[in-house]
Image 1 (cartoon, rainbow, N blue to C red):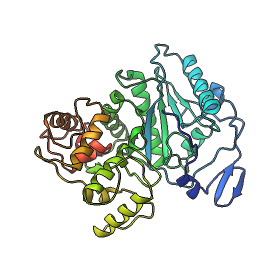
Image 2: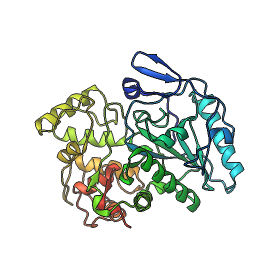
Image 3: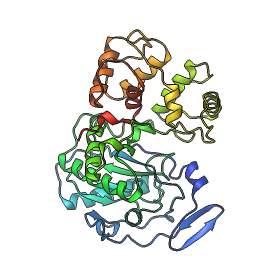
Image 4: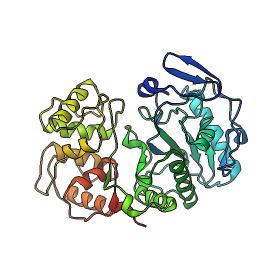
Length: 376
C-alpha cells in the first residue's frame, strides 16, 4: 500500500455521524473514545486481535463512519516476500506495520482494517475493526485509500506481488476473510476491488490483481451465491474525492465527447461539471458527488473494433499498460499489441477473446467484474 498523506478523507468527514460507546459530538461528526485494546472475537476466533499481537494504543480517538460499507479493497504491503510463515512473524508484521503507519505516515493507528500474512494468519489492523466486523454495523474509518476510507474495508496482504505470486496460505485466508466481511456487511464477491482501482499506485501488484477473478469466484462459492444472482457487471464507482487511473479513463472518454478535460487522473471541479452535464444529457440522475455509477459508465463507453483510433483507444491502452502489458503503447491506434492484450484480458475474465472492446470488456479493463469471470 503506497503512503497516503490524508488519513480521513473529505467524504468521510462530511458523512461521519455514527458511533458506539463513549462519544463526543463535534458538529456532524462523532468521535469515539478508543479502548485500551481490542477484544478477541467469539464469532471470528481465527482473527488475531490487537491485544494479542501487542498493538500500541491509537494516538487519537478512533472514529466510526456514518457511511454504508459498499466494497472491499485489497492491497499488498510492498514488504519483502519472506519465507517465515509463523504466527510469531505475523504478529511482528502487525507491529511493524503499525509503527510505520503511526511513526512515519503520522496516522492515528494502523491504516487498514485487517492484515493477512504470507503464512495465512489474519490479524486485526486498526483498533475496533474486529468488533465492528462482529456487529456488521458501521465500520471503523481507516486510512488505506483516500476517498474510500469510510465506506470500504481495507485488507493488506504481506508481500509484494508485481512479479511474484501470493502463497496459497495467504490466498486461502484472504478468501475466508473476504467472505466473512461480505456476510457481516451485506456485500458480495463482486464488491471486491484493488487499491489501484481508486488510487494511483502499484498496489495490489500485477500478479495478485490478475488473480482477482479467481478470488472473487472462490468468495462467491463460499457464500453460496447462485450464479444467476451475479450481476452482468459491477463497475468501480469513482466519484469526486477519488483520484485514480480509472478517473483518467473517464477523462479520456469525456474529452473525446468534447468536454474540456485534461486526462490526468485528478477528479477536479471541472470534471464535476462535465459529469453532471453528461448525466443530465443522457437521462441519468445527476449525482451531487459526480459518482460514476453503472448507468454513467455504460452510457459513456464506446464499442471499439480493431480499426478504432482516438482517445477511447488511448484510454484502453493506458489501463492495459498499468495492468502488466508493457508492449502496449498509448498510440491511440488499435494495433496488434493492443489487440493481443485485450484478448488476454478477455480470457482472464471469461469473455470471448475476440478483441472487441464492448461494455463487458470495458468493465473488466477499468477494474470492475463481469458475470462470466465467476467460474464455480
